[in-house]
Length: 237
Image (cartoon, rainbow, N blue to C red; front, top):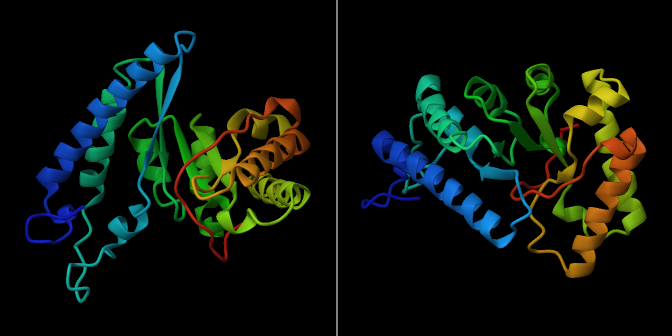
């Protein structure tokens, strides 16, 4: 998003605060629309995607010219924006709000500090240095939503996707030192990225593979779901 000068709007903290408020209103309105369309639905999850979270935190967002970078906002500023969204959505206690970034786990401490219900991330981009933050999320009762399949996996068979998803989910469980039942209670497996670019057959195969992996790793108690945004990466779990 850019300002009138063509520069990243992140430079204007007042504008970002307004966006946070607008996201909150939009989330509540969308949840209401879901309930009207599906009268039997009593609980709604709102996912907020911020793929550039790490760049924002590290001051890596480029200016319009590409020669400069936008100064990173301080921690309290970032958390004030996130707190507005979480508190605004939680006005309705039947709505959960989940934070997703398609980079590493840099968003997790901020989500925990501002009462978000879950954090979603691409497990292939999760550095070992972030495991303490992931473990802290589990201890705080914040649900983990690791993406275990990336778009580059869509071209392989369902069996191969299942094997990949299972291996990635199991590596995360092992790294966190969680028993299977504890892991099942804390985790929902998902694709790391939206499935909009997949064919119907690929999307079905990916979701079936994730469901198979969830049953294999932790039995029938682990849910499987779908999330948007994120990509692939090297060096993660």
